[in-house]
Image (tube, rainbow, N blue to C red; front, side, top):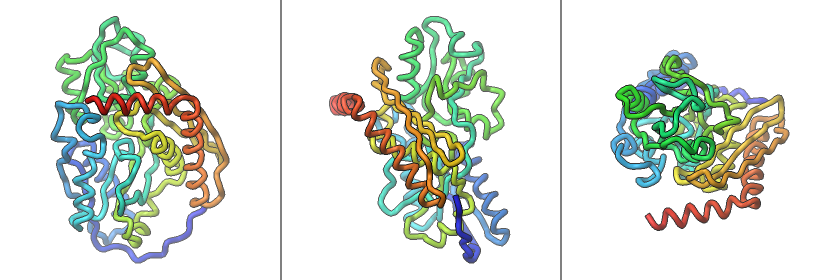
Length: 329
């Protein structure tokens, strides 16, 4: 994939909107450090904010508005001119971007796997009957209920440090977290086992960071372009295109994981009922174009095609059941 030289004048000041959790601030500071290296004369600041998703911890995300609750306040800061950009864990970004906003860059992906974290046990297979496993991900819950029906799945909310504290207090026998966050905060030793995608497909975009801006800020997009990792961006585009076509949200248990091999992208995905009783798996691979624009368009097409295949095989029935269930709540 080729990328043209932007040749734009460097910015003088940039403000990054960020949630105030330790992980979110690490991510924002990481992007800030990359920007300072690119533009040494630029003053890069971080605007810390607490989102509604951070404040409401006693309810499932699927019942209070989904993952968009983690980004709406940040988008408001961008729209009002208080910030220029926001840094997100892409697995927390809704599949449909709000009108007037776009992802200007997708940074190189960290480990996309889920991580098994426990103070007592070495792996999921070592857990006894009735062991309490914490997660608030419908995707993880469906996979756990299908593969380990003897476990007791319990809700787990809060930022990364809060979740680890709850584990250490003995409220759970194990918890499942994204490996990337633990690695980024230097907590890799807390990981007892990485759960490979073959056992638990990650969430779309898991392990990748995205930079969101106002769509009309073309000069800002040009400044941020060097942060974009084309291979990760293609993988994430395929994953998000699939999830978008399947109505991807907190209510839909689905996983999607793409790998880039030379000019070929291979995407694997699943969609399931919340209890894991029905799971549909699919895989699709395709060649990507030589230019960056063509490659990203091809990646989205692969994701959309696999979504259509899953819908034809019964995913539409799963989605209808989920919609009916949500309407009754």
